[in-house]
Image (tube, rainbow, N blue to C red):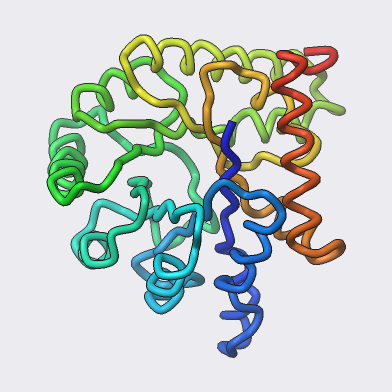
Length: 255
C-alpha cells in the first residue's frame, strides 16, 4: 500500500500570517525522507493554502511524485495541464467549506458531463486521473463510465463514526467500514484502482489499511498535526508502520 502525504496544512499555517514559513515544499522533502510514497496537495480555486508556486516547485523537486487535487474548473485545470504532475484527483469544492465534505456529485447528467470533460482533457495530456467519490456503487459505476483510471473513496463518514464511538458504540464504525469494504471490492471488479482518504488518523487508519483492494491512502491533517510534535519524517514513519502492520495482519483487532 502506498502512503501519500498531504502537505496542505503546512501551507495553512504559513498563510495564516502570509509569510514564507513553514514551507510545504520543505515539508514534502522531509515526508519523503520518512518514507512517503507520494505527495498530495489540493490547489483550491481560492488559493486558501497551497499556491501555484508550491505546486510548481513540488512537481520539479518531489522524487516520488505529486498527486494534485483540484476541482473540474478551468482556472486550476490549466495549472495541471501546464505542470503535468504524476496524477490528478478531481474533487468537489465549495468556498464556504472548511474541508472537503463529500465525494463528487455524479448523479446529474450535467455534473457527470463536466467531470467527464475534465478527465478527457487530462487523459489526453497523458495525466493519470482519479475521482474523489463517496463509497457507493452508483458513484463507482459513474466513475467507471467516465473512464477514470482510479477512484479515491471518501472515508469521512467512517472517521466521524470512529470519533463518536465512545458515545454511540462500535456498530456505526462497523457499518461505515463495511461500506468502504464493499465499495473497494466493487470498484476493483469494475477495473478501477482503489485509493482512500479523508479524516484518517493514527487511531483509525488500521481497519482501512487492512482492506486488500485499497492500494493507496492519502493522509494529511493527522500527519501534519503529529509532525508539529515529533517532526515530519518521524510522523510519516509512524503512520507508515501502522499501515504496514495492518496489511500484515489483514484485519484490525476487534473490527
